[in-house]
Image (cartoon, one colour):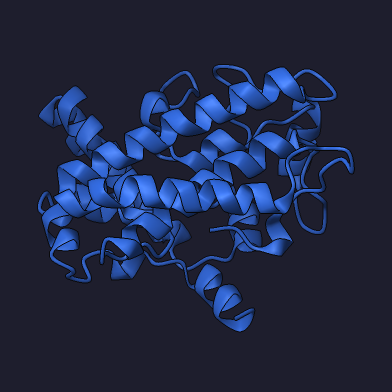
Length: 253
């Protein structure tokens, strides 16, 4: 799921070598593929297990190799919730199922309108162009918090900034700036689990290509049978596949 350009530098003394992250991804794929193969509900369960695994691995790393500085991210901080977020199908199916179970029909209809509007503004944008567009995630609640926090994507879980002020300054005008400093181990662990979940999809004979969150969520909300269609290997999420990711990974082999 990740590529070298998105990896973060690790301390030379860290026990978390690139080989460890590869092994984590492979282990998660092996464990999750049978769940994905069961059907849409199994895929949703695989996404839940993957999220729990990311939390457990991050907690263990925090105990053994804690961050150099306190993590600045707190509830209600949504500064970075305008970035392009990539997910795999089980994650977006989990989010859609959560929304269907917790929202009234009226609230769900209003949310779909926001998702459609955000998708219209962001569809096809590169990571850099998306940052410059300043389109907030349509899943934010009235207080600026994540409206799907318990089922948020692994990418969202992976970002752990050391400096909230640096995040604010970056997002005011991100062009040409490096992203704010963050805890690299936590980032790479969540990304490794995500890579494992994506590989589990492919190993189960389903499409694990990364999807842009808003476009994929629009499809899942507009088409309640999206999970069944994806499980039947139909290209229901083809319009949400992230072209930037595909181009980078095809080019890099």
